[in-house]
Image 1 (tube, rainbow, N blue to C red):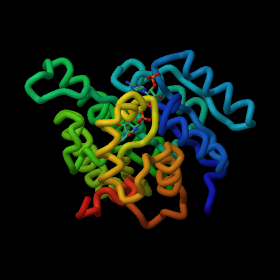
Image 2: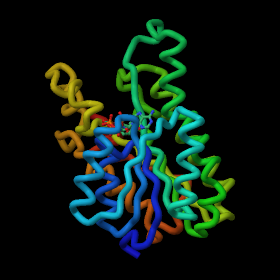
Image 3: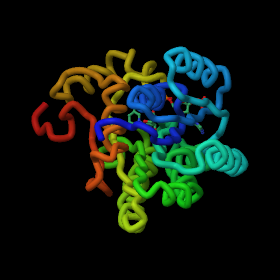
Image 4: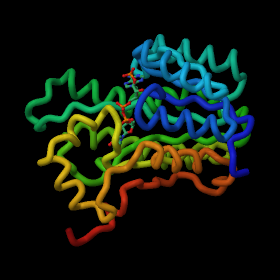
Length: 253
Ligand SMILES: NC(=O)c1ccc[n+]([C@@H]2O[C@H](COP(=O)([O-])OP(=O)(O)OC[C@H]3O[C@@H](n4cnc5c(N)ncnc54)[C@H](OP(=O)(O)O)[C@@H]3O)[C@@H](O)[C@H]2O)c1
């Protein structure tokens, strides 16, 4: 059971960063994966890289915020897999600003990707997840869901909503054999944060606040997600694993 042999998985935002590490981790554990992103050339490059390693992966252009794309994705997963064992709601983005500086459109965009889309995808794939009998949904939230890290209010608000969605669906769907959990990263080195973490005035306080004194690698987040996806985690639902190098339990800096 320490593997994902024969599992059919869908990972949103799998072409880069944490999602890409998830695709690799899942594939190396034996899963068959459909992963998404918006940029076709990034998707194709990731797909090529993993097919060359012999992994069973397929990259699909699909924007999580588009109803049309979500519907097409559902049809593809139903046709290719017929069932869904694992759904990772990983795609996310942020616009960092002071609260008063957001336009209404920017606010809606942040909430749309990080909160609206995961709920819509969970609902859409419910029947295929139920069919699995042993399904696992993992929502990628953030420490910003519970602590302010100057990332902007809408992102934290959306990720916080995602945590409550995790708990609510875990209860509602337990009797269908669907576990629902979250993983909440602290700063992790990906294309999303690379620019920010190059700035000494930004990375300095992050390292000072983190007992492990380093930034997470995306594989370290993917490992937690993979564990929750396994049948080994069969009695764990509604939980949130925080991958933060001890940051959130550190009282003294
Ligand atoms: N990195 C961190 O420090 C950190 C910390 C806390 C939480 N997180 C969370 O972890 C998750 C992954 O972050 P990351 O750092 O790996 O980000 P990333 O490096 O920017 O990668 C994001 C992935 O999602 C895809 N994506 C973005 N918007 C999408 C959309 N609307 N529809 C479909 N795919 C979309 C991207 O591909 P395209 O651009 O081609 O669409 C890419 O594959 C996010 O939910 C993020 O909020 C990250």
